[in-house]
Amino acid sequence: DEASKSCGAANGYQQNLMNPASADSRSPEWWERVLLCSPQADDVACMTLALAKAGFVIQTCTGSEQLSAEIAAGAGVVIVAVEVLTHPEGAPLIQTLAQQPPESALPMVILLSPGAVGVSHALRDLTHATFLERPVSLMTLTDSVRMGLAARGHQHEARRLQKELQSRLQERADWFTRLSDELRDPLAAISNSVALLRDVQSSRPSLQIVRDILERQTG
Image (cartoon, rainbow, N blue to C red; front, top):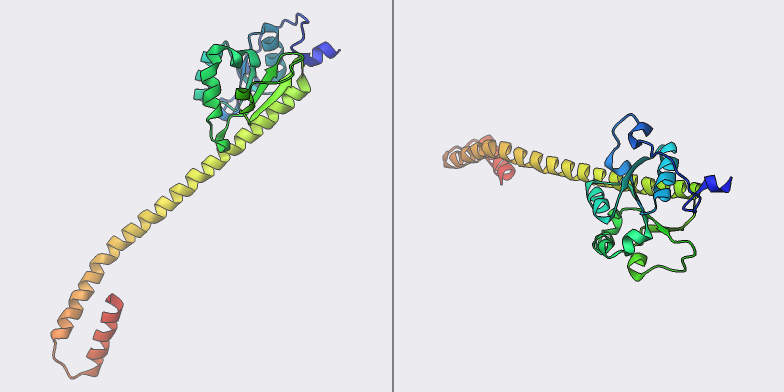
């Protein structure tokens, strides 16, 4: 029925939370983690179960302080109830999220109260956020999380490629430095030989030609 296809309705839905680790035998990468924070126990139980069944790795948080710590540890998507962010304790978290560079902003799904007609200016500044009104369709929630994780994965890949490029550029610079050092010694020897040739008095044209060539090459 419809109640089983949405979360956030007052339907008394109760389930034991599925262990996120059971959804995948390997250790998840930080950009694959989905953080979930809501004061509504039914929200947490329903969404955790649904998302874990869909194959996502879920980490639940009890409040803005733990959510901030988990974000610092690394996350792919954050699902958070609007009450957590609008609470006075959530103000530092909103400020931190609003200051993120656009190219590395953490995708968020913010759960609004039923019948919400708008959000605060602070929340509207979170341009990387998706707003969903409760009760939330599980299909919509799953799709939002999937798109957020895809965007986060692209961010991670872009950073990886940037670091790889920087590493290769540094390797090239180091190679040129070594090459310059290796060439300096033989060139110095040749330059000294050219200086000695200048002091040699000879009528042989071939010697003059050789000396001129060496002088041009060692400049």
